[in-house]
Length: 329
Ligand SMILES: NC(=O)c1ccc[n+]([C@@H]2O[C@H](COP(=O)([O-])OP(=O)(O)OC[C@H]3O[C@@H](n4cnc5c(N)ncnc54)[C@H](O)[C@@H]3O)[C@@H](O)[C@H]2O)c1
Image (cartoon, rainbow, N blue to C red; front, side):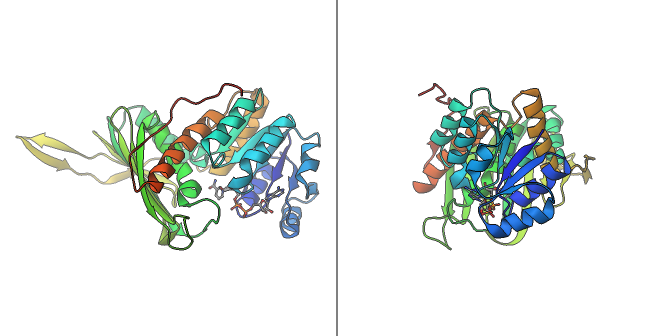
């Protein structure tokens, strides 16, 4: 099974390496000569194209888009119209309406979005442990995704970083939030937030927050799940999941913290991006929707869109759309 990768930039080169290692790279397309050169070096013998139309007209049956988010809707729509299965880097698009348009029109094509943490072995383990009740009832989840750069010009930090956290927290909680509120600030560019904090309220009582910033002195990617029985931490920098057998118990009417050292949970060291690429290839072959299919993409877009609305309205609580309009228009 061969795929055509479009975009060999900052992130696309990682997809290139992985699809190539899996023997699945049929062609690479990039508009920039220096990125074509890089692709040619990384994947000798693989055809390198400059024109997306040429890839659309080729007999390569599937396309992976690692182009800027602002291009996703139009380029994915073209791929579907050309009869290709399509993988789209996150976010699926820059509005819920654009995402719905893709899902409405995908027909029997595979549509997958690159919510990579859903394929990260440590996150898969964390989701499994949580869903199996190992932590008791989940009370609170939070995620910090902080670093210095890469600063985007078109989408703000919420749309650039938070899709990963929204996807993973929804998966851990097992539902979509019913409302969100978000605050943030733009320091580097007018109207492009560099820092946001988003609060999420889930129907069954779980609450969460996501703090993202590309204006931060060091890299931190840490997701914490607080349950009634245990607590867990996923560290995205080390790739570890640590489980803390600790809670607060009531003894003689007093809240008493029960403390314990964390225990690192063994997980496979498979590369998350390779797992994601494998999932796309598997979906193409089996015709089964991948875990992060178009609907999953919409679930994340819907939360981002409500958070954006809140951000633009000084943190007003905003409902999250949870029933998507998928009727063909
Ligand atoms: N999963 C992750 O952790 C992760 C991390 C970073 C970026 N991303 C996503 O990857 C995507 C790409 O981001 P990036 O930082 O690599 O961008 P980039 O600007 O570094 O690279 C984009 C590449 O696409 C090419 N391109 C754009 N339009 C094209 C067209 N019509 N035809 C051919 N080539 C075209 C550009 O020439 C460029 O080489 C974004 O959606 C971003 O959100 C994901």
